[in-house]
Length: 411
Image 1 (spheres, rainbow, N blue to C red):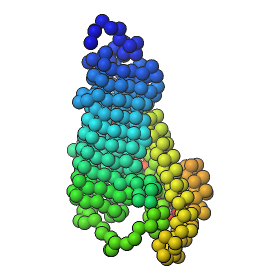
Image 2 (cartoon, rainbow, N blue to C red; image 1 turned 180 degrees about the horizontal axis):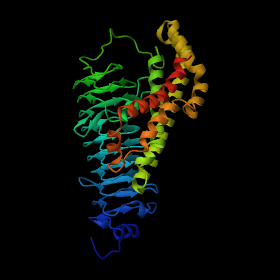
Image 3 (tube, rainbow, N blue to C red; image 1 turned 60 degrees about the horizontal axis):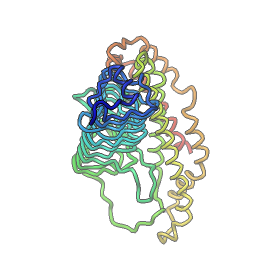
Image 4 (cartoon, helix red, strand yellow; image 1 turned 135 degrees about the vertical axis):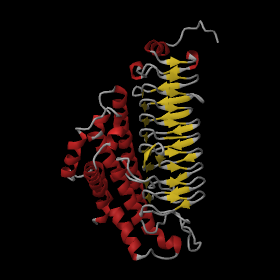
């Protein structure tokens, strides 16, 4: 290539800021990108493309070391590594990383030092700090937590799938692997999802769980510290009737609790991370991005649960024709309850958690948090919290989660 050809103005502006671009004639920086949102010293390798007015890349980050990377409207904190692939509408906090072949779509949030190896697909995926995924993984529509450090973290083994689409063509399938109320305190036992396996959503998995390699798990695991010795097997084969649902209580409850966890995480970012991520423009951009990702997740989950509710019309009307028998009374009652109560539930889910819940616990926690030394970063400050503050903070967030679950259990 003729090196005398003038560089695009956006590339020149980044070079003038001290951004390191190894092959500037091969890099595309869209006019929408604000150069001041990319820190001096960021390293961008050959073939990368960056777009989006809200894209922000923090100090020490490296883009495209293994293969070209396309970044669309993403926020990267300090020392983030995106080694190759496509990322859009995602937020990566300090030290997060992705290997080559990444395919990361909107709604994805990776907190501090969370990451994945090569050829991983994420969408509507949230990893709390330290959670790590191997290679050749598809893990969309799920939140995962657990672990205390980079050496003691929750793990997804290679060739793992979170199954998030049902044969009845619905996606009311979000899974909670860990939770927010305790997971944000970075003091829970890690969870291990063994390679060459899968989790069928919507599921809840408790801290300390081990699901061995080669296992496709279809149930909740609500007791902590268990190894799932074998997957549940269907008692017998039976005819499948598209559009006809059986009991839906577990599906609805798991969806509501997932939404409650997103409510709790949003409050965490609004009230807690405003201190530990403030004062630095790149971390502030990541906090704004995280709140946007959580908001996208809430919209997605309400939409998908609404689609499920609408499907109850067909299920209730056509069960006998499709299967030769009426649905059991209890099943009909569950389906009718979701259909009839959905407009009210939707309005309350879109409004958010009730005002005033857990105020005493919240304020007790924030009193200690606001006096913490934040010089060691967010994770360091969380690690220094007293047991009392952790208990108060967890109770506050758990109350928010339970407020969502009550929308079904109260009926």
